[in-house]
Length: 506
Image (cartoon, rainbow, N blue to C red; front, side, top):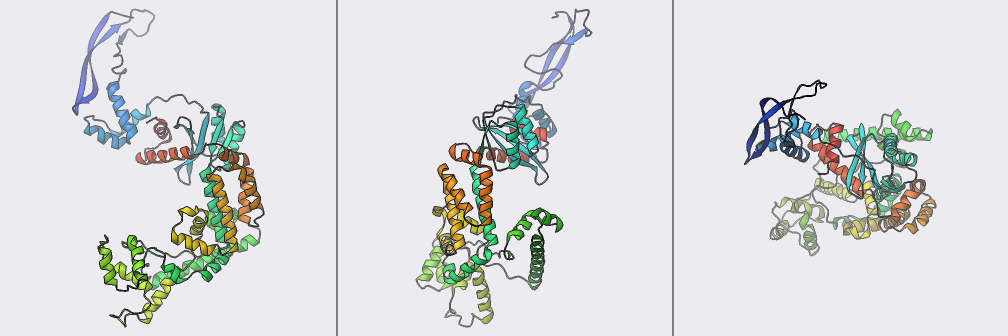
């Protein structure tokens, strides 16, 4: 303590604005002499208490306001908002103030969730840890392999329940660093894995499923479906030639994949040898027939909300395009008559009385080609959705399509397994798990057997998912929040700064 004044000096500190006008405080501060002869500093300046820190040109209140703006927005966006509020600050300064935010000590949660996030998709990933009981993000870790998570769990022990997706890396890390913790598999990922399995199976058995579809689907039934009504524009000769060349190249690669498979090559080896995406290699590896690309059936049009009414009037015998056009205009339609004419074009069985020569042979061929597209088998992805969705969520067209598909024995057995699995997961029917696994084992379908084998390898975590209320859903929500924050930062998302913003309670 010293009471001997050496001198005075004027210190200028910026404070929060008043009525959007900048404020600067001019403080007459003292320099004091130290009376301790052993102290190397002979003169020192008095501190300003909670007003401003040493050497700071901003008050603590102003720094807190800029920090709040920085957490709500990015650096440049925060600077623009601050300028409107009467605070002159650069984007870099906003980022610097956010970076200096003190961090709370990390406490290991009792119930935690882990999930990966893409720092740069396909190249760099990280791991997000969330406290389920408090609903807050706890920490961000670089990397999504087992080593970083195992190290974190070792340093912050105490977790009793850990929710995760189906990642084997996270499973190994938890088994290594927290073997006493109860692992809970995420139920959404289980349903997602089931749909992917069904999609893969439908791709492999597409040939026989397509045969059943052709034998039982009709143009009349397809035209009753209230789908979009405008067909794609005709393709030029050059585009058709390019399409044929592309198909030839894809078929050649498909045959090469099948040849390598017969020689005993794995999917990863085929992917490297042919410089092919692993997902494409997997599709070709398991497909029995060459998977054709799905043609674009239709485009959304302005008459889609009125298609059911048009179908009703068509069944009543109305074939006059302009009459139908005038009727839907009274129902709120604001477009032209062209979409109505195209809709009728696909359904007209004979020329209109006013234009008996309009339905030429070339037009008939175009209609025939368009109707052929309507009756094509849906893609494997669409088939998988039809088989795994709950019956109450299906529309009438979807239900008609499903009824046709269920006439195939393979599809019927897959549908039964998929529906039982969905009901079991959604209803937490843990007592059904063993019988369902047995049904998959005896299904004689490689995809279902492989899926059941994966379920058995993670049996304890999946059983816990059916017995407990915990899931990885909140963690997925925090991952979405992290992505939003990262995009708002416009490239200023260096890991340390991103971690501070994600962990901040606001």
